[in-house]
Length: 414
Image (cartoon, rainbow, N blue to C red; front, side, top):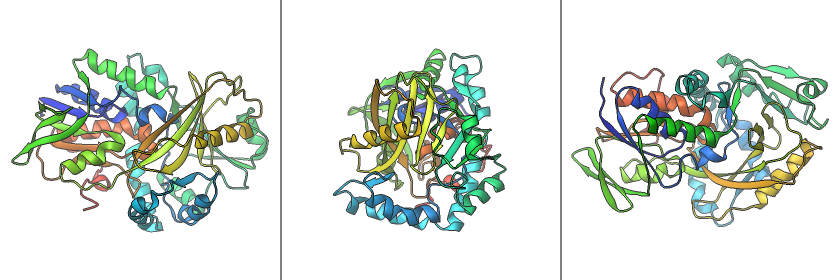
């Protein structure tokens, strides 16, 4: 078993989980992030933990719907004016991965990566202050269309093939499961083996504190480059100053693509802008997470209030937030939950790290003996994070990974 020192770039759920797994085998860890711990996509997500997440966002039916969404100002997909020429080549790559054959391959890889999420979280949080934040409570999908909650025949096949348990609900049964919902939904589907984290930001911070208690050093700074020699990274440039490293792991979310290019790895990651609102005093909220299948957003009860998260916007890193997207979430919240109080609402916008095939990158950086990648979970970071951390730790230790990582190769786009 290999041990030593490792520098991890990124202090979100993947970076922090990786740190904890590596510490257990004797590594000393330094975490570097340009922001505070857990304040990227790990802060703003819906907190869903979904071992049953085996349906890619890029499947044939979705691609056919995309033009209509783009023409609808209240649709779930937006490409910012002026950004389309830049993102078009990436969108073409995405479309190429939307065939039935490609979608089934992606689905199988998602099952491999997501199936063990609760077990991995249990191993990381047991006996720590974070333990009570994870709950296997089920998730509810709803649609105003008959049979809409179950999705297409292809998505139903994906769940069946993966052994994902589902319970189809009628209109009346939906209200029995979640009485707070408006009586507008014609179909529902319960995924009883899915769950949630009660506060994603709190979870990541508590895990980072656990890593610190075991000796991890957490630095705030901007990584601007690498010093390299003979197929090895010798130092990480932090705010222009070199920090020597023995090994380096890139787990920096949406900025990981830029860092990968500095290591001559052309990983086509796109910053996919997402938005959320959090209602601190909603007066009423659902018992379990609810996904609106029609409008493509999630509703998550959390310990700080009710969060609605979703929408997809391609605008690039530097574009300011379009807060009209959060106004849309507020409108949808009122439609779903008629008794909801909106007196105290906060808004957030951030970038999800997304690759054209919907799968992350996991493995050794090509051409380097001491550099590794673990990033690109898009909408599934909280689900995949602890398993990604466990797997990359196995790879760094020189062990055979406990899951099949073939689908996540950093070289698959070369």
